[in-house]
Length: 229
Figure 1 (spheres, helix red, strand yellow):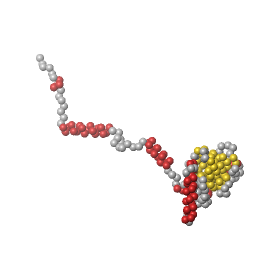
Figure 2: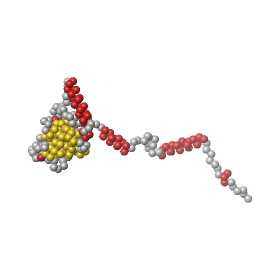
Figure 3: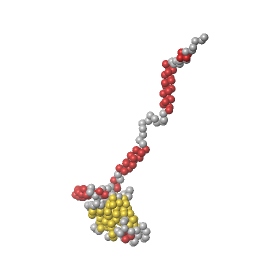
Figure 4: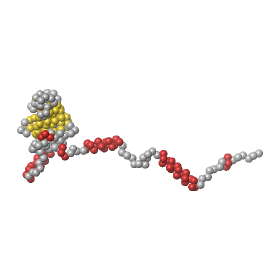
């Protein structure tokens, strides 16, 4: 009778040489490295959403070029000390008042369409552009939309004055102290036209703030005005 077989001792246990074990370890590590996705070991990049937000904030914080930081008036090359002192005093006074005039702490251009009886343009509706500066100055262009005066825009400039608060209201005065218009800020970027050329508005007419500042360059050679808001 044959003796029973001891399967535990009968199965040959594999034996590996130390050099063989080291080679197997290297192969295993190489295989793991190949399985990782491309860029696995690169530092994480900012998300597209974060990049977009950063770029958007950067665009919002970008200031307009210096030539758009209006104070109107022809560039002055030389000034006497007395003139410089007077101008600095005027600008200081305007700056103090501008701190209160919240909607006009920076130059703004507004645009809208006004009927003929408000612009005196031979009864043609006009595209009305108004630029207001923190210095208290304003410039305007009324461009007729049709008729013989299409190529003859009305141009004017003067000083704006505060005539009310809550909401802010201003009056546009020309160089000869004639009142051109009365306007109300419905909010910082929207003006309601209360009157124009002594014509009271019977319907709601608005001027909307524009993304770009229009310096009304047709008046660029006019001397600066001494305005106090």
